[in-house]
Length: 111
Length: 113
Image (cartoon, rainbow over all chains, first blue to last red):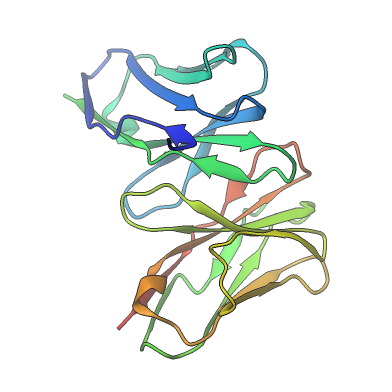
């Protein structure tokens, strides 16, 4: 079982719709959870981070964490073509703050 | 405020050669991390520093790899006797401490001929 799992996609949504990206993790001791956006050929860019159960909103983005279910999600409201990218879920478990990444979900926002 | 800076952006070299990459973190950040990313995969952790101390190394970091952060500021990652399998994007990230999020540089893309 992979430590961090994501559906590779592609996930296609129409412009203006809500995109829902999901991630599950295996280590119950995981403490911190991050979403990075990565455009093709570019490096990961931090979008959201969440440490506690519940929802965290920032503009069009909402991160949701459920530690009991070992599940973290990212909602993107009013999706734009510029949101088309690969979204990487990353988790920190144990000391050191090293990130363990999923393989990413490719999002396509269609006009 | 400058972000994480990595040089060079691209490196093409022949198999068997040595290569060195440099990372300059965000100025006040104590933690510096190296990751490697291959096509279709998420970044994989290689090693990290707190100030000048190298605190953890992944099993991915074979004896051919060495990283330094001599004065707790910039870091270098050296790969000796490069192999085809070393072709990847090498990413550097930094964070203020062990809790705050990591911010990535633009990466160094290594191609082994």
